[in-house]
Image (cartoon, rainbow, N blue to C red; front, top):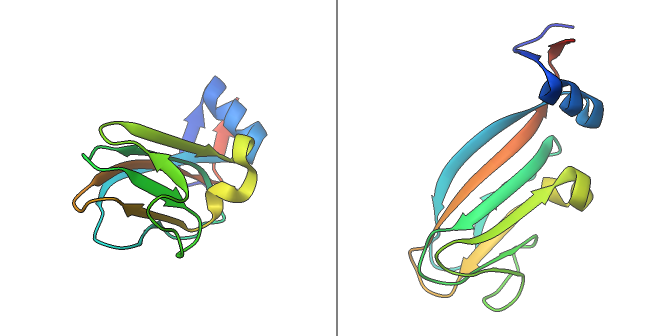
Length: 122
């Protein structure tokens, strides 16, 4: 198997057994615009997605572009948090993810992890 990265240890062994590869992280901040925002595109290799509302307004997360203020999963202002994992939420984590806010200018911090097939040393 050609590998782009090599991992060692208990975490590598556990991830390999659970998802058949390693979870490679990606993080950033998404500033919400007025209206519905697609914050993550669909990704069949995504195994984790977590969001923190760092803004002063309520934010709702959903899995359809028809999400509206007051519907979906509420992330309260100043630290509201949502985590989705393949193990707990099945393939829901791989769907497109949308957000809408009650007032403009909220920042959502996010971290995701994608499965990547890698060579593992035991």
